[in-house]
View (tube, helix red, strand yellow):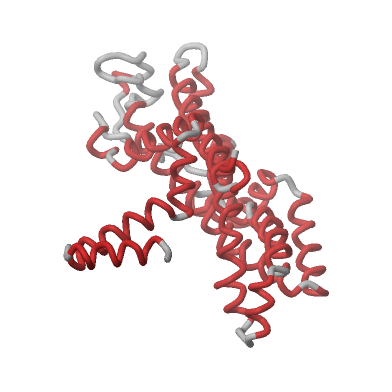
Length: 311
């Protein structure tokens, strides 16, 4: 008799009723499910917890930026230009007198949006390509992988620059560019996972039962490839934020007066000797954000690996 049946008999005999039974079943499921084990292992990883704290801090600051900002991030004041950090401007002001603290808060929104949306673009395009290529194989796989090889031949940031050069500058085009640059990563990753998963007995049984290929891919194959996709997406968000900051630093991303971190860094490089805070704070923000996602990715990789959880 399994655990759920024992609970059914216990609560039926005790007369505690349906609500208590459902509560016990849900508590048992959450306490023993695969994802609850992953969460417990993740929270025991100090690096992952530090990453979660860093990411959570930036997310909360970005969400509540309108309430946390002390000034209008676009308001200029030449009488307060290049002020050092103090009571009036907590992180100082830039060359146009704009409050750096407020600009950093709103810049976090832009950087997070770029990271998340570009990864969603990469997943939406790369995962189906990798899944179809790995599942069907043959000439389709050869043609697809040669195209992916051509994309991989370009360094990711260079490919993003090429896409931006074609589409034009702007935050939206940076999202598209970084998303397209991440497609080969997901295509290769998912193809490798599908090649191993499709040989499992349950996939062969589903195929023998006459289930369509699309249903097999999306119901049986891809759900068992989620772990590497989740881990890679965490790392890819960090990479996308770094690429976006680099493109904005080069003048190909966010344009003035948009308060994006890479753009703020680019505008402050001419004042590094007289107003070092203009490059120090955005540089530290980019560093911490990328570090947070990398630490979380390392923790997720260990937590989603059954062998690591068993140690």
